[in-house]
Amino acid sequence: MITARQSGLVACRSCGRVWPLGTPTCGRCGAALVSRDAKSLQRVMAWWTAGLICYIPANLYPMLVTTTFGSEEKGTIVGGAIEIARHGDFLIAAIVLIASVMIPVSKFIAIAYLAHSAWRPRPGGALRRLHLFEATEFIGRWSMIDVFVVAILSALVQFSVVASIHPGPAALTFALSVIFTMLSAKSFDPRLIWDGETIESPAEP
Ligand SMILES: [Zn+2]
Image (cartoon, rainbow, N blue to C red; front, side, top):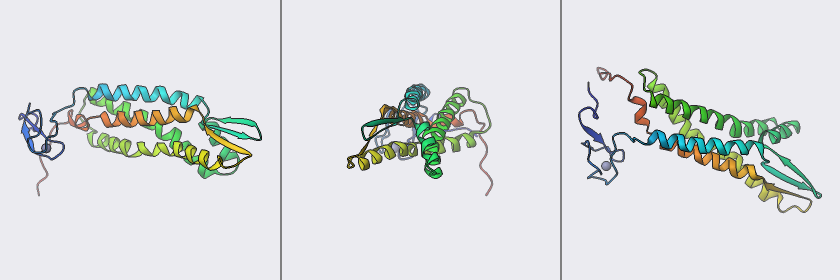
């Protein structure tokens, strides 16, 4: 068995039509044709690093600034979750921790692992890596829950005279971090996952 790439062909990722290697754009739908995105891993790591840099202040600076009767209270993500748990809302505390700590951290690890194994392709485990990539892409957007919670809280409490809630500097850097890691996952060319694999014959019907 040989791959399309080995036989000098490239498939259009938009409409599926196969063209000779080196054809710049698909003659059927006009999409750009690349057999492998050569700069994919560079872009993945650039966005990944930017995301990680933004994630550090997101945890150090306050996410919420609450003003009650003139006294100001600042809460970081983890500090806020502990505070919520102390009030007995364990479910909300768990959601905050999962959305803002567990998901981003496991996303950083997953993307770094995928990029590393695409950079040094080895046979085995490609299907597992594909599932990991799909999970990473799917789960990323849900990290934004935290930013929405801050936005909704700020809007709700703004009407009150005695208390007001403002998003802290961490809200912005956290949102940026989520966007950058989403772009990092988007830059990954999933075809790189299969390059280390040996081609298997199709199963007999
Ligand atoms: Zn096409």
